[in-house]
Length: 128
Ligand SMILES: [Zn+2]
Image 1 (cartoon, protein in one colour):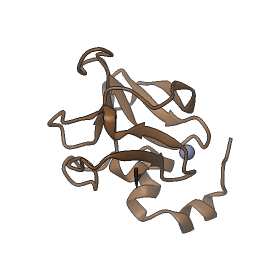
Image 2 (cartoon, protein in one colour; image 1 turned 135 degrees about the vertical axis):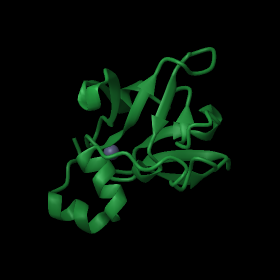
Image 3 (spheres, protein in one colour; image 1 turned 135 degrees about the horizontal axis):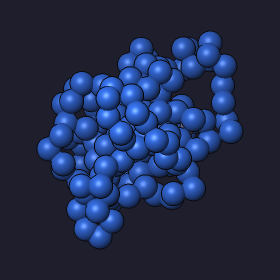
Image 4 (cartoon, helix red, strand yellow; image 1 turned 120 degrees about the vertical axis):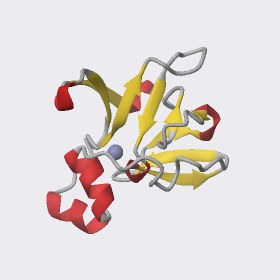
């Protein structure tokens, strides 16, 4: 785990980044920096710089959040059952720092059939 203190996170992160990654908030759809971003590269955890997703698996789900059909490496994320807001969902967190990233749904494209619905505020883009 690459956990920082709460004070360090507050210093490092913008308000929306802090609320999403440390308090599991969800940014408004179509409001984030990456839902309509299609450059080639990798998306890193905004808290600890671990590469989590690739532009190669990014697709337009029309939902207003960056969506990926798979993670770069399943060892880098963890999935947690989330029963908040009266729904049963699978939450996605960063394995190294426990940042909340978003949720994964099973209505994605082939071959995985998965849709990782990720908050832009939880990731940062690094061009290839
Ligand atoms: Zn992280």
